[in-house]
Amino acid sequence: MLDMITVTSLTKTYGRNLTAVDDVSFTAATGRVTGFLGPNGAGKSTTLRIVVGLTPATSGTALIDGRRFTDLPNPGTEVGVLLDASAQHAGRTGREILTIVQRTMGMPRTRVEEMLELVSLTDDEADRRVRNYSLGMRQRLGIGAALLGDPHVLILDEPANGLDPAGIRWMRDLLRGYADRGGTVLLSSHLLHEIEVIADDLVVIGNGRIVAQGTKAELLASAGTVARAVDGSDLAAALERQGLTVTAHPDGSVHTDATAAQVGQVALAAGVALTELRAADGAGLEEMFLELTADTQREGAAA
Image (cartoon, rainbow, N blue to C red; front, top):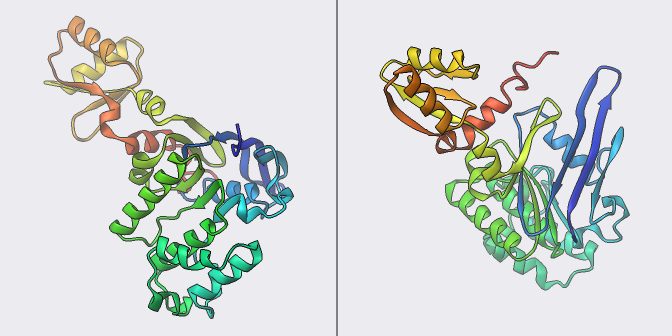
């Protein structure tokens, strides 16, 4: 399959004691949006920097259509990259930055105006120095630069940072359309709702390691069951007696990895009256994400 991103056993260590990325493997498929999720410090940015050749891996490989990014003859025409919207020359105008990108790639001059229109930067904004841009405007400019070479692959690190709700909706529609036309999108973010809306596939990383991956439907289906009972403690006790893992929430609900059918059978046998029983995917991606990364959050991780 062309233009697939393939990351295999990727590891990055610093010195003897710090492992930023630990045996990471995943793929981002053609025609799909792959959401790369994780808390701050989980290893997302380091992984993406290795993929685009900015940081050398200690071991493992990161290939785009079977080639390393650094081996691509004119990489901007094949892979569009936005890793840090603030890393732009503050003294240049937005139009000047896009013009430099256009000339470097050997693209037609018309691409500059096309990209300004695509990312909704007005003529006045395009002629303003980047030091006077808001973060949202820098994000739009960075996305324009990433798309200028008409690449087949997009790699974006936290592209929604600084965008207002209308800007986030614009970005979502842009990336969805790009993938639907056959492009490959690898999108890193901690904004769970935006990933839930746009992503086809999810890769969840915590403390440098992959803790879950699959299609959005697969991961949500594996999130278990949420139930409520007239007496929540009786329900929790009945489930635990059957060897099921149970988590009681402050709102009175009980979460378990068991299926809804299993929970219903246990409750019936124990004579516990249920007031709610549903798959946990109704709670959305956030609950699953927080559970999967509970032991790997930066604030709670061991030094």
